[in-house]
Image (spheres, rainbow, N blue to C red):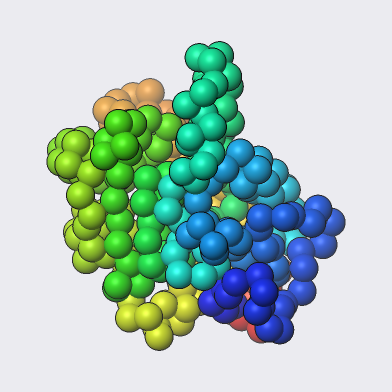
Length: 285
């Protein structure tokens, strides 16, 4: 399902393009077996963000989230790195912005991260090379993160006199406030092994096994009901960090009662009882 991306000048054979999507300048978007592969395609700057990349990524995530053909989204980077955070030339330009301009620009980045976090489709971060600053935010926003064992991570903002503000809520949700205190303040680099210990990534793999590990997870993801998955994501957001009280138990009962009556649930139960694949499972799975 996933094939490692290469720089624009030497892509080789490409899978089919996702139907109905606009062509993007800084992203490569392809479809393999109902899985959309979104590749940040600025390898010359280690896939660093600028305003154009942020806008394109927001647009493609919204389009894929609404596309019934797409069962899952893999986010990866072309070239040597996953994403090195903010483009330094973009940051230099922002330094001359007014406060109002800086706020508007920051809101665009915050909106992109929220779009990724709330995407109704399962999202998988395929991480290799460097994931710094905002790049770590992308990892934290994805539902599943799998990293190459040689990948390196850092919240490098403080070293530049900045703060990891827009990515902060997602990263702190992933690694906890205590770990954030260390790594936000020190801005030190840490390994994929440490990222795994912290809960930032779910699994690590040798470079030549990374795609196989991602594909293994995707093989499970595409067999689950797509609407059930979207409801699972809403459920997690609704009940996480809340006390298990009468209000929460009533809400969970309401949610499962609503889902049980859905056509997807009826098909899923029927498929299980009839020992066949559910209608939503892509051919070849």
